Length: 328
Ligand code: F6P
Image 1 (cartoon, rainbow, N blue to C red):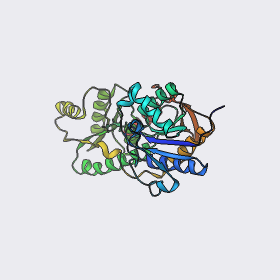
Image 2 (image 1 turned 180 degrees about the vertical axis):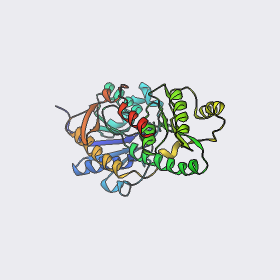
Image 3 (image 1 turned 90 degrees about the vertical axis):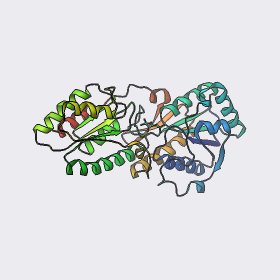
């Protein structure tokens, strides 16, 4: 029988994402609700190694549901990638009387958790949080909805200038390996073309789209480019490439960068964070370990960390089709 859980530690790791604070809050309050203790770990896995812990009560997490970033701070710890680092982290958890760990983050966070669980058989549950939405087995990751809304708002503003000056704008959005932000914001903001990491026909299609747009009477255009798109050219080289064959275009480049990661979480992300925080604590008290809590059609589901990390996420061909049709 699994050991009874009396004390849970929670940390955030990897790139921050809006909704992380709301998830920490839900974990802490679930512990309080079920009469368990909760420890916050600062600076992700590095804080586990440095024993940067603080006891958290239901009142410690007041007024944070609406805040972006993570009050526990985050890091990408190199030391945790070593066996010695993980051994130190394990000793600190045992010394502090911690029985289980909730890790909030993306693929790097889950990979660290998986190693840790395998080595020490320490109960771990992950909550998916990354603006990229690139985790297998959950419809949404925390922060993705907020980031999408930020991106659409920014593109709407850029559109005013594009249209007033008859310009072509190339706009870079985040997403090294996943085109979810680019494809969805592209559709939502009415872009003429979207270049994604999942496809490598992007440049030719982009040139064809520009040609078509011109013929159909469009006077300005917006192209959304995911940072990891496949052409091998960065966004400035893409702009140069277009201008060589289309001198008539007045082209501007805009890299949205880290404004996509910050800001107050959307209501969707706050509710998702609350569901997943409660789900994570309840999974641990039910004796589950080595899983991620995700959502599948609104319901909280348990997904093995190994599955969450699989890189064979299906690309949404239907959305691509919608983008093609609505941009004519
Ligand atoms: O994984 C989230 C993410 O925002 C990616 O989209 C982006 O490529 C990366 O983090 C940027 O990381 P950093 O903040 O370390 O530059």
